Image (tube, rainbow, N blue to C red; front, side, top):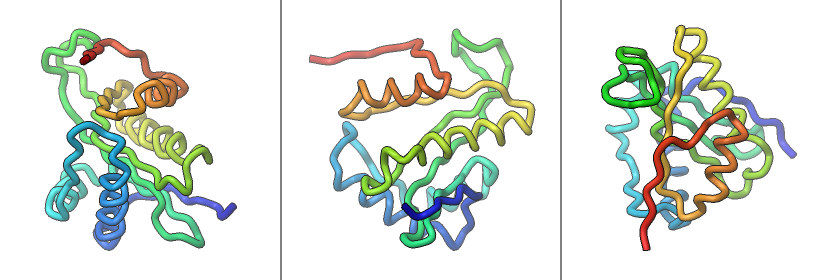
Length: 152
């Protein structure tokens, strides 16, 4: 297994992130998944550069990414009024690199960056078709479900 480095995303990484995004779309493992555009990723990188991280493998280039944004509490019953939090907007690891704790490394690094900025809270939502696995993943990283919506 090649070592993986978690680092800040750079503008030069956006094309590789877009490639990962297209891979994610092809997997069809999220309901109504709409890939982000190059402009959307560039805007996210400009607005919240500390919260856009990539996983890079020596032999394969970028193999994953996580992208979040800082928000202020507005109507989330689980956070105190006015408290900042990080909303994880996207996290993805290429299928060939899953089950190697890369997603967890991305998550932990993002939360460490937030803590360095005095932010202790984080929220994430998912439209995954593999919900049991996703919930298990987030629970391992300290998340607690507070809202569930089901369909039949």
